[in-house]
Image (cartoon, rainbow, N blue to C red; front, side, top):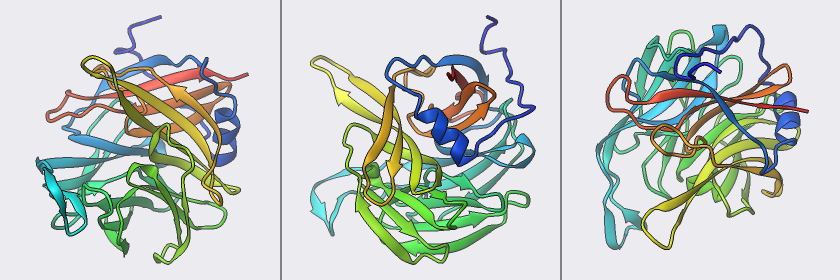
Length: 301
């Protein structure tokens, strides 16, 4: 096989529909092997990537948080918060499978600067942006993928870390900080359902697709080792929206160039024939070329 840093994936045909992705994810087990078939540097500073989704014309949209002042823990809670809000700026970048810089828009306000997992519903990009601390507040934006015009959809008093739109019902399904709660909204922001997520192995960071009462999510949990360092466990799961229970899940332990599990944050899944393909951007980058767009594949039965 050629060096993955030099290989590009043919994207002549792909399917990222809910039905295709769910069928594929149900085949994953802890024996599943992911092969890295592409590793290309981004032509821009990605900062702290959070979500990635596919739009028209093979373009990819990457949400990131540019941190200018890190949060600091309080010795004891202040106004219900465990840390300072920090400072920063949220971004959505337009790119492609070669990591090219094709466009960018900033979003957020004041201490609301941390975008989460994003989704494209065929018309709009949905981008939740929150304070970088649990139990905080969020603004959900819809962004025109062609002009990058930003429209505020609604606000919510909690940290929304990832969102996906159900193509059948039109509803938005979201996860809170650490994916401890699953929320369902109308596009105007009316909360219609709230349930605790029943799995505690992995904190699901981004939602990939939703439909027929289920959503597919990916994420990460870090467990301390007896010595220095942590063990990073990534995961992909099918979540029952009504109950918050995990219907099927599989671990992911493949690491990025910086040593992060590839499902650390931004992930998009799609099908190409008999292959499940993952686009991932797990690593931070403060300058062009510091982080990479990773393309991984696993064969389906």
